[in-house]
Image 1 (cartoon, rainbow, N blue to C red):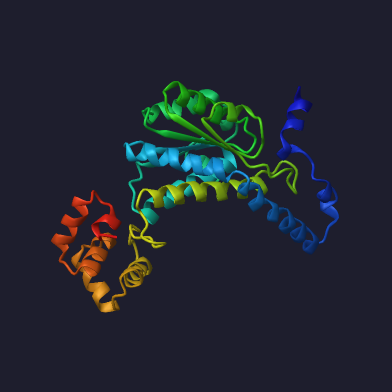
Image 2: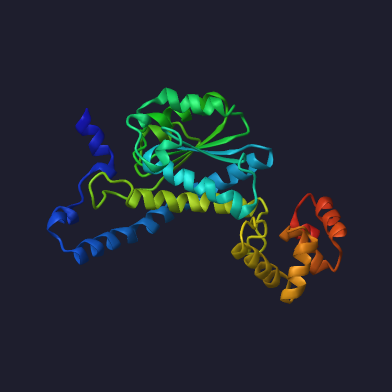
Length: 300
């Protein structure tokens, strides 16, 4: 039974090209890794229709007040935590709208927590603590597609009527059978056998980048290709906000700075001010009348 499972998990098989890895020079090792990494984007590309379906599903759920909840363990969980942590400052959303659960909790972000991923009950428990609802979307991330913690969470999510999405690096695994949408990126065997922080991890990062970025674009947190809702937490980001307003409106630096101050550091309010030639109060009314839709508020 064990040998059959290993055979099914392509990520656990040995890569013929790296069988003499410990005898290679540094340049040979990095050349081999680079060559293998080139295959990752193509493997992700084959799953673009499924990724797009997941984006549409998540957008619809979040428009109804649902949350995007990532669930993972080990390297997969850390990828989830990273993506979830980056979205609130990048897109100005609440941290409650996008959550990442990792087996073993916060300690597992920076170090291994022995046996944490082996408990299906803990996966269900952690989602229960979030008071999971039918409007939420749970994205289970597991390179193997067999991680008990993630499987437990996905089973619980299905039982609660929440939408489920699977992100994995192996085909036809239990995780896929628990998902409404399965994204199975077949990256194959790793240069270092079984080390799914390599190609599998890279594919997960790419998929999560696509999911979260496309979702936030479709939800209106981007104007053209500019981060119009980014949070300005330091001088570098304040300077970026001014440049964004200049790019989006064609205004001079002084006008962009004045508008940003008058808008109380809301870039979307400042942009309406600059492009419509109105004050801050009128800009907010325009946005309110458009239910926050920036394009509508601008009449574009």
